[in-house]
Image (tube, rainbow, N blue to C red; front, top):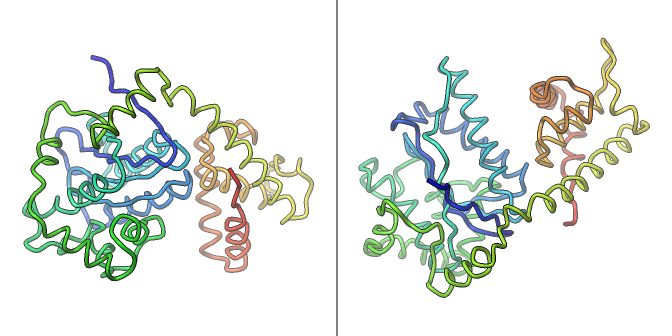
Length: 327
C-alpha cells in the first residue's frame, strides 16, 4: 500500500497526530510531559516553526504546527526521534515508541483552523480526563484563556488576534466558541478510517490538489534544495559571527587539540545544530568529528556551561539572539 503523499508548504498549518505503538503510554509521569514540551520548544527554535495549539494525552499527542520554512519532516524526525531516545534511557527500554508514521493533515486557515483548535482542546473532556474544560494540565487551552503564561513557541495570542479578534474581546470570543455544540462534521472526519490529508472548504481542497498534486508539483521534491541553500546561508553567518565574537581566524573553528579547550568551536557546533537545524552527520563531517553522535555531546556541554557560567551564558545568548538571517 502506497504511503500518503507528504506535501511541505511554506507557512502551512498541519494538524499532527501520533500515537504510542500497541496503544502504550508515551507519557507516564509529569516529567515526561514537561520534557516533551521543552523538546517542542527546542525544535521550534531549530526549525523556525511555531505551534498554534497542542494537547498531550497519555498515549498520543495533537500538535497544530505552522512551518514557515516548509520543513515539517525534519521537525518531526527530530521531535519523535529525540523523545524516543529520552524515554528509552529513562525507563531502560529499547525499540520504537510510536506506532509508525505520524499523521499530518493540512488545515485551511480561518474557520477550519479555529475548529481544529477546538477539537484539540476538547480531547481531554471527551476522554473523561476532565469534568470542566480547562482542568487538564497538558493542553494549550489555558494559554488561550490567558490563565497561564504562554510559551515562546506557542502563538496563542497571535492566533486569537487573527482568527477571532484582538485582545480580551478575542479571548471572550474564543471562550464562547469553545462552548458551542459539538462539531459533528469534524468528528465524522476524524473518526473515518480513511480520510483526506487536506481539511478545508471544497474550493480550497480543489485548488490545493490542482497546484500540488494534479500538476505533480510535489513540494517534497522542490523544498530540499531550497532548504539546503537556506541552511548554507545560516551556517556561514553563524561561523562568521562566532569568529568575530572570539576574535579568531576561521580555520581555528575546525581545530580540535587533545587537552586544549576550544570554546568557539563548541559554541559554533551547538548554534549550527540547535539554531540552524543542520543534521549531526553534516556538522560532524564539516568539523572532522568521527561519530555524528558526538555532536549531541558538544551541545550538552555548552548547555551545562551556560547553566554554570553567567558570563558565558550572556555571551552565548548574545550570539544566539543576533542570528536573524533574512530569508
